[in-house]
Image (cartoon, rainbow, N blue to C red; front, side, top):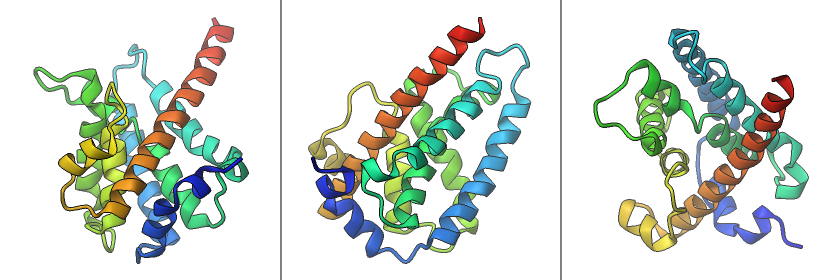
Length: 194
């Protein structure tokens, strides 16, 4: 049976042609995690997502580590790219609570999170690189009701080439899958606590 990396060679090509290194990805993750923690602290204490969304995202990042072999991740940069997207995918949920906009829709939390992350990435070398664009687009698209097709992604991200589009489609899929798996585990824990 083929694993994620075998089924999605464009993902590896995208990572290999990027100059963004694992130290930069990890540093960006830590910095953004601090922003996430700050947003969580600013949430009303009685809100249902207080602490839970932060814990959910951290468990999504950890879930990647648990399935490294299943995914076929062979180097730390592969792991960090997926863990970054999975670990920060619900950033926008907290922003929607702390800084609500009129007319916002819950499904737009992916876009809200990607915008917030994009604002914070200015300190990272190569923050406008193709790899960062794909990571942010995956966060942006993970919350759509329907998984976008490759054709949809070509229209939405016309500056990305075919390799980046294929890698983006793969990354969106894995973030959505990890979100569901972790969400299911979170629901089981929550049910047991009650």
